[in-house]
Length: 185
Image (cartoon, rainbow, N blue to C red; front, side, top):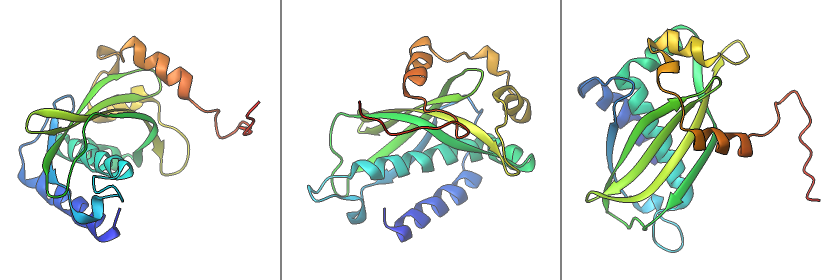
């Protein structure tokens, strides 16, 4: 994604979040956008990698408007994506308006799970499931229960759907403290 475009979107979301109504951390966040020329690939539709960047921006809107970002940063904790899966249904074209809807759908003992939808004219074009963990500025992982305490939610009250826990178990890579050789056998 073009760095100028990325910066302008981030700035628009950050400024816009202050002007828009606050959200509960479990409500649906909606971010409106349109396809720019720099979002296109050689087939003249939005590049699949651009979707992932836009999903990052939309999650930021949810965190800012819910107050979670401010609370987490005060405790020197920040979120990272540890796994994601996206399915594409239709292509977004140059100039097309769309929105990204984001919602936390559950927690397990290690992570938060978010569903995000790319929607145009009330029709879903793509859907992603994102697993996030929380790291400390000083190093190490913040347990999800502690993150819930910081943000003011009881994570045990919204367990991740079983199929997401199974997906997570299948796609999770070894810890950074363990070897992870690339062996195709």
